[in-house]
Amino acid sequence: MTALSTPPRAARRAAAARRGLPPDAVRHAVPALIALGALGVLALWWSDTPRVAGAADWLTGTGRITGLLAGYAAPVLLLLMARVPLLEREVGADRLARWHAFGGRYLVALLTAHVLTIVWGYALTDGRGVWGQGVEIVLHFPDMLKATAGTLLLLGTGAVSARAARRRLSHETWYYLHLATYLAVALGFGHQLTTGADLGDGPARAAWYLLYFGTAAVLGWFRLLRPWLGERRHRLRVAEVRPEGPGVVSVFLTGRHLDELRAEPGQFFRLQFAAPGLRWTASPYSLSAPAHPHFLRFTVKDLGTHSAAVAALAPGTAVRAEGPHGAFTARRRHGGGPVLLLGAGVGITPLRALFETLPGRVTLVQRARRPEDVLFRRELAAVAERGGRRAHELLGTRRQVGPLGPALARLVPDLARHEVWLCGPEEFTAEAVRALRAAGVRPSRIHHESFAL
Image (cartoon, rainbow, N blue to C red):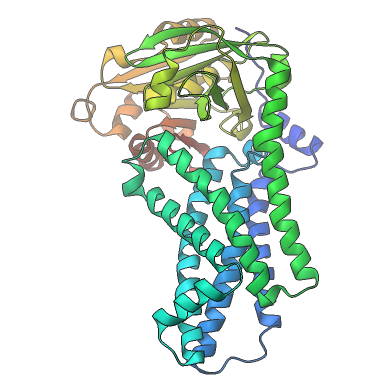
């Protein structure tokens, strides 16, 4: 396998400068732009509201504000997950997913407040009951039947995305349910124009059209057309499926022009296999070895129906790959000091690629319950011997290992000086972040990626 060179801090900054962007500029700019857009939406209501007097006006005004903000938030949330390469590379898919999840809860709250306050406000204005007013709005206002269906879809998706419900769903079920949000947003668009008096007939309405149709164009390009063109260009096929451990396999893909992908260690692809039960779902899998001009390797753990079926793939199966995605790469490195790569379970996969390619003093620690759960033992030992690196295994149950902080300190005595790349299950990641912070590692030097995308 061919190792990719990894730029130190100066080279990373130089690369960013060549793109015309200072480091972390996009990561900071995106929330600022979203907030600026929200302020612009509030300005629409402010400019169109000469006075507010009485409970009916206050309730109706609240309904208008929350409706406008919900209408703005819906396409913004879709854009965050549109797999735009600039955002995926500079912000990171993990952070984008967290922003999307937070924004989804915000959208559900706005929609709920919009429905309740607008119906209540109209009922007070017309002097009728809330239930009767609600039925009147749904059945007789323009585009309200479609908007109601869209609202119910969004609220339902929000309910199944709650942490308690999400744990009971497979990734595949959750993925398919989220596809309904595209239909929900489309159903609500007409209602915003026909009954949204704040949009008027001038620049505000034109901007709303641009936001929605621009979002549709971005989604169409990056989620549909671009992957289709990449599939035709690279002609990826399954070359081999190799067992690595209990419930874990490595999938080797071959294809054409793979060097054009410019995949970096630590990144992932969303893979869609042309096989029964797999062809309609694209799931994220990390590179478990540096990209090679002739093949890519991904390591997959049986975590659901999709990943279990991957182990049975036959050589020659066609693959559509979206990516590379993710900012869990050497670009995050702040200097040339020592590095700790800390992983658990299948979280070791992106760290395996980074272990081979990061320059300088690099230590890898793999957390596992049993020796047979350790992945890439021979490979890691060979890389360590060849590059003067260190690979450790932290084995046993929580009771046997004890607190993670002291256990890491025994393996990595000068832990506070290290910059850390951390990947694994959510509980492990949270525990590791607390241990590293307690050991003196600065938050800006802890880079972590979650598998809960």
